[in-house]
Image (cartoon, rainbow, N blue to C red; front, side, top):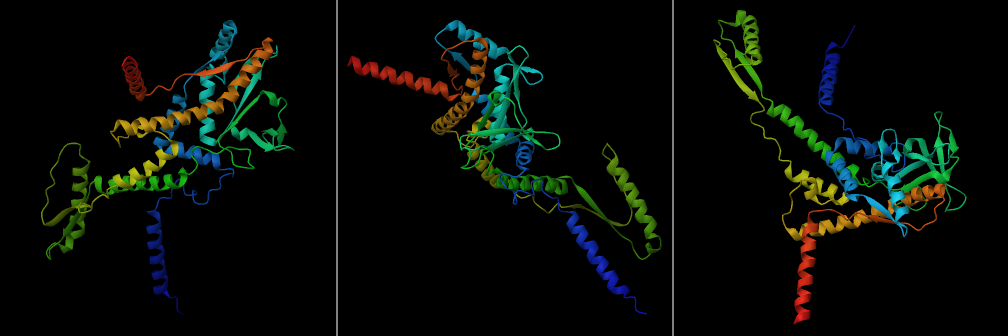
Length: 379
């Protein structure tokens, strides 16, 4: 009978080799980037993963939210303005927050990350506003009604059933750059998954290379002579034990042995690839998409004041656009409050000025221009 022991051994060795090679490969956390569809169910999880695993993206979103700033409500009647602003400063938000600034921060965070933000004006039993609530997009579904101007907001139950909300006039909804024929907005992070995948590969490779080369490992080789071959196994165990004790010792400890023993550092001849240039190229793509000046994120790429002022101008225009999207939700909150109080007044939202370092240089430039105009007028 022919059992083909040799062939089985060869196949087994091949299988072991393939397993060893495969085990050295770590699957990317964003391995599904290539097959990503913009509007499938994993979109929100995708953007959450981006912010959780790439700190500069998360920091940029928080920077934008903080730079949006605060606002005040103004109208002709100063008493009404003070009353509305007092309500906004003390309104309850979610479970343990208060103030319209807390609501706007959570609402804008959802808007920038997912492209869509949904909130709710919660009423109490007495017909007054009890608080504001930022809804989870997993519990809400947006769909188009009979006309292109009709938006239906459905609540998703525990069993997955869709139920129309009872009071849609109390629902706040904002979308960021929606595509045609789509009720959902476009995330600010759209376009970053492919770049982020390469970025994470480099960062992961740097960590692996440092683990292999930076964390020094030694290869101890023992070549027994002809007289030592009879007890070479015992001698090898003795050398391994003493070497292990020397390495585990917290204090420097010498390793002394007899015989032909050589010690080499594994990976000492290898060099870790320079990742500065590719990482900078990828960060430039991320920063360009988020429209954040690099110096706000601690990246010193340019030292010229002119370049910084241009970047600040771009950021200011972006902040004005985000503020315009939030104005709709703010005006709706104020409108509901005024209806509950029986107030009829035209109100205006006055945002705080963008506070950046270049504002000082801008004010100085305006002062110099005004002084120059005065000199020309006197002349």
